[in-house]
Length: 247
Image 1: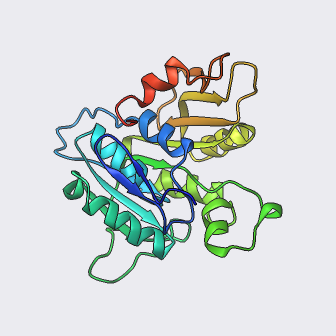
Image 2 (image 1 turned 30 degrees about the vertical axis):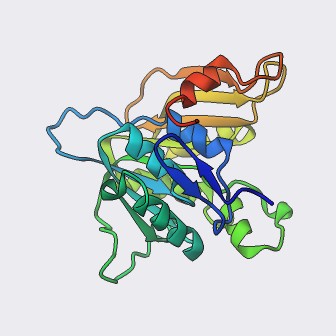
């Protein structure tokens, strides 16, 4: 039986009620994403975590930065679990969790609604990416894993509309989808700023890519990260990236 929770240094993530469990992708994104330094005297930088799931990335960013974070997900069970994880963490005052479909942008009219006019300094997402021919029949899990629940074009278009002028948009996606994703971002006036290709070992092709976009055209800093070394041990680079989180 899988462990129902994952213990990090400063918080615990329960994921027994979530379709998607704590995994390497989320940890990598939470450790790598950056909140921009702003030229304005804005008091609070704001972050939107799209598809927050258990709240993992939101909590990682809350640990790293003095920010206010909104986490959204379409799955009721995930929302309830993320709220509990946030409530039981040291960062409860920095994070709000909402049941929200980012694809359709239909904001709830209830008292606990999001502000649909809110702009964000960082929009971060570990989006669903499996194609329809791998659908399992488990509706909740499929919604969390498949592009049909949040097509890349909708994610990119809506992120662009909700990003501040100096904001960043950061995702982790399959490496094979990176070129198309970058092209879609350019069509929405979002330009690649940083790229990290992730491979299991030095002899493997990258399976995941983390991409960071801004509204300004700049030189792109590109790197490669191997999760394990030739002895199949966790690499020093991976340990350095995640050292503030793993026990």
